[in-house]
Length: 184
Image (cartoon, rainbow, N blue to C red; front, side, top):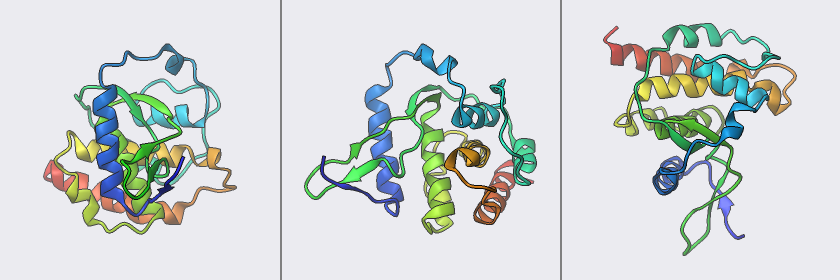
């Protein structure tokens, strides 16, 4: 396979994810999603206020305010790719190729929010990327859940301690954005 991940091409990664999710929209929910017991499953279920598997993650000072900011979401769920930013390959003259598919049953907007959160934390994306995708359903809640998911899974990345400093400005930005959306 040719091509390279381009995490700085946030909008192109999200658009490729949207096209991918549109193609797979009719697939049924795989039963293996109920059997997973890993850090990513923990983070996903914590983000969506579902029972978490045993063996919780290490705490982070950022999780409580994000968990407090969760609100109910009524958005259609389907099979989605949960880690697009490093798994969309771009090659000249070819459409984007999506690889390494970690499957989740969530709204497609959540997958886009994970891209935005990753881009803000790790790839120097400008804050305005949040507003560019604000038309997506329940966008503020998707961002909150994407951050909970990523922060709660930090032990799986092999870090000895959570990268609190990388998350701090993004958590503040997302909580401020969500507060403005709620009018508070």
